[in-house]
Image 1 (cartoon, rainbow, N blue to C red):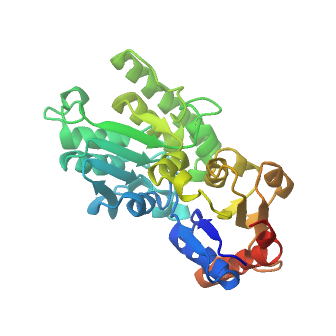
Image 2 (image 1 turned 120 degrees about the vertical axis):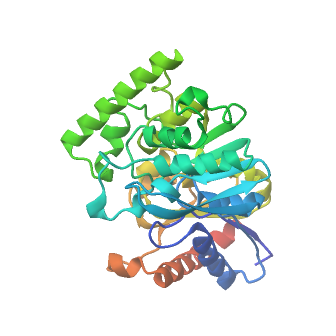
Image 3 (image 1 turned 120 degrees about the horizontal axis):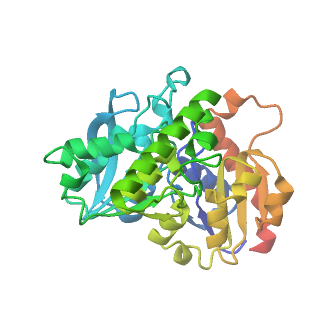
Length: 360
């Protein structure tokens, strides 16, 4: 084969591989078939796990470390990125579901306070633009915990209106969630159950969020609870929109703009992306479809640990849709890091061997 160019832009395989590790595995698969190929690896995230790492790879900067409160108000070490006057925060670092065991999940008491501590620290260190990835939260408190933390840290007299330091800070929230804060399509009803909410809990959480939004609307004279992204991260999106005037952007589009993806994919022969599980929901704004949309006319190969609705994914424009796991493998075995990396590498090699080379 003539020297070819490939781009690997893999999402993390949650609980198994980071984006960086998945990219490396894909690169090994490429090298096994095309040892002289140019391979561009781009760590990516749509706002959840790996968001800070993806931006660090793209723009550099300094990783800030501090101890904050987790969703149950226990100390946890969290990190965010500070590059000049731009901060990048991943709310899962402080308020994420992986910080809790399954038995500990309880959105009635889980708080976003730790996220507020991260924001306050960034503001104190001179951040003027704060980008916030809203994926993977354990909370459904409509951002009340975050707001309380900001008041505790920054308000001289203990009220929101006392805070001066936020006036010149611009916020961008990265989320592909379009849901409003309240109602049957809102944060509690759609996302509450996966965070441990019972049917009765969902009603309680929705009522709490509605009451908070109504009180906030009276205070500010406007209501942003129905805006796209308000229902993200258990309503944290709403708090950023209503209280901090945030702009909501697609997480993957925001990152791809930052890394100048359109330039990096130019003249590529194949883009390889992937995630833990792919199905028709992938087409509803998840990371791989963002990669597909930004790849222009370059063919895109989608690989995943589990594939459903393959024909729909192909019809959407993916050139190849392949499951990395052989039939009969147990979930426990498939989730082992070294097994997942080998399976990604083998799958990418197989795709190239079985015909991709005829198109590049």
